[in-house]
Image (cartoon, rainbow, N blue to C red; front, side):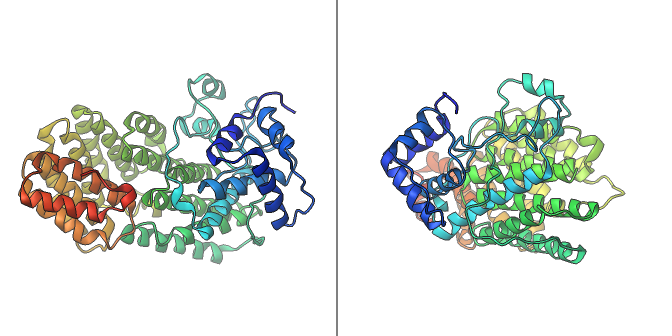
Amino acid sequence: MSREPNARLADLFALTGWSKGELARLVNRRGAGMGQQQLSTDTSRVRRWIEQGEIPRDPVPRVLAAVFTERLGRVVSIEDLGLARQRRTGAFNTQRGAPPEPERTAEILTEFTGMDLMLNRRGLAAASTALLGGSVIPLSLYDWLSGHSVAQAADRPGARQVITGSMARPVVDVYEPGPVGAQEVDALERSVEVFRSWDASRGGGLQRKAVIGQLNEVGGLLTHRHPGALERRLWIVAANLAVLAGWMSHDVGLESTAQRYFVIAAQAAREAGDRPRAGEAVSRAARQLLHHGRADEALDLMRLARADGKQRSLPRTRAMLNTVEAWAQASLGRSQEVGVLLGEAEELFVQESPEPAPSWMQLFDEAELHGMQALVYRTLAEHDPGAARLAEQHALEAMRLRAAQGRERSAVLDLLTLASVYWIAGEPEEAAAQARLALDSIGYTSSHRTGDRLREMYRLTDRYRGTAQVDRLRAEIRAAVPPARRPPE
């Protein structure tokens, strides 16, 4: 028993508004519903958990995770509650420098997706909107990506373990899938392509639950032994699905959930030995931070995502990473760095490669390259107005190339980028025309990101308010954004 208070549990308990007696009753009731009739939690036990750091025996931590998950409307794992017991094997050992065993990653994956599915069933997931602060990359993953020694990682300021799952089984009803063969893995790989195509077209809202369910299933498969090549393919499927789950979660505003999935994706890629795949997953977390205006943190993640990239990543992958880092530099108003990064991205994009691009890079085509360049220069234009014309050129080219692709969400984002450029450049009539085109299309997607970009563009209309055309447009924008995310008048 620890004599230190459990700060994690105390903080989450404070958010619930419960008394200690209420929590005790909820644990007993939920435990009985799970078939654990023997639980007899009382107020004094809850006090010992919080004030003395006592860790209750299984299944109480699992029950607590389920109770807090339901109350807070976001996935709360056993480790989030500070109730994970130390294991003698499988956990990261700083003396040996060994990464966690694959079974550990699979169990983290299945616990987290299991809790997320439970939230989907109960309709509570919409409440999880907060983005986590601080470092979210576990030390072992940081070391593997960056090549730092364990001693260097321990000395790095601010580094800490990511909040992940525990070794406990998920608190949901699941069956135990057995080992699979090559044909089943082929089918799983095809399913990833279907989900990815749907996400690119309509946004993450409608298929998120299906992706999480598939990922949960793959996590179960990975608890069994498979031949080496087959197991590596399964880990890549897990990484691809986790990135999709993260991107879809971000797309519908579930920010802390999205962060966790990006880290799980990088951990799965590590188990497959695929650094470029892990780097792309980390770059998604950086893009999420940029969406929320946290450029310095995004740059830190991009340095990690790009570590050792020239040795392992294909030119097109490096081009994609350059565009994300350029977005971070643009957010900080650094014109010279933006020019260097985007110039190099264009050169890398057209380089021939003896290897085909991996499936997860297929969507980074010429249209996406121009779309990202447009976003970067539009961001820079708020610091350097001369970047507006470059943003316009790239946005128009992205829209031309996307016209026949069926990627409605990307097309809406391009329109919003172009409208923002025109507001910045002092061309309100052109800006209003593009904004109305975006408004006409936005209903076809289930993306909160488009709403966030719409609100950001709305901010730029403020200097033109007072004219009839702009005032009508501002009213239409407010009506198009859900009340909880609606911009002020």
